[in-house]
Length: 110
Image: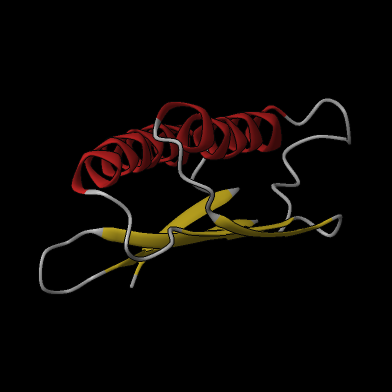
């Protein structure tokens, strides 16, 4: 199962980071639509943050199915608004996948 952890600041609900780990095990490697969808959404979001908001997040990843992304502190208000919109869009997309394939992906907020 893919576990997605979304870290939000309690005071204002701002997304500070996310972490995805695990494998969906929906189908064989190369045919797993849950894994492909979750990967496309998360990596697409990270790429959009860098390209559209000009923000370089702190990223950790491994071949074992781990992707961590933390937004650096001290970015401009304009960049932060773009980043938050992109991250919120990612959450909506992942929740859509979770709704249809909940046995293979779980989203947690902390």
